[in-house]
Amino acid sequence: MSGLTEFELRLFEWIRQSDFESVAWSTKKAAKSFKCSEDEIYEGVASLTKKVPTRIQIYYKDGKMHIAAE
Image 1 (cartoon, rainbow, N blue to C red):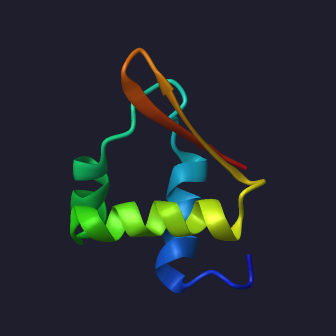
Image 2: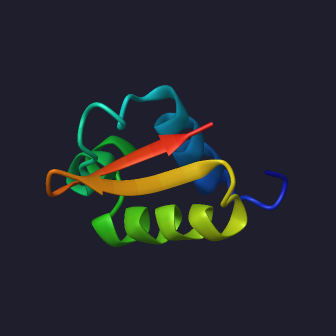
Image 3: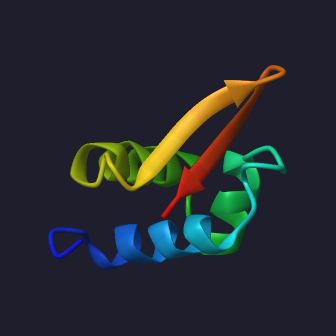
């Protein structure tokens, strides 16, 4: 976790505290919450999967993306 940027840390914590396992992930809503572009959210999530792959899981269910973090 020490190699994460401030944005990545905030994004990870937000994902960890949210219930995106039950509720589908929305990049648009995430961008609105973080007051940034959707591209920045996509890049942040992609970076998290590289930097902390054992602490984040992204999967599709019923055509929707879900994210879990611990």
